[in-house]
Length: 122
Image (cartoon, rainbow, N blue to C red):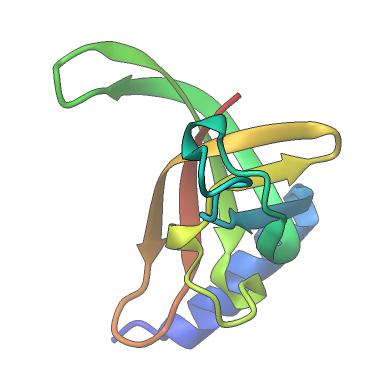
């Protein structure tokens, strides 16, 4: 039987050693002007989580409509998520670069969260 708690610690150690500090952000959904919601939201970020993230090489991704494109991925240790579900977050800040989260996946066998995989785009 695999020791998933030990695997989660190993994932955090490897991502910290090979990655860099990134911030995962969740934005508010309230529009700036409720009378003119089409102008978009200008509300501040509601939640931020900072931790180590490791970008992995691009790979081919197939959309549901069958179109293939290059995908970029970021691995983030679930031990750094401050008990937040990062699958509901919107963007990642890496230095001065902001990445939009296209898809977020959590590897969590049983109750032990190990690692998040974010598909991101600029």
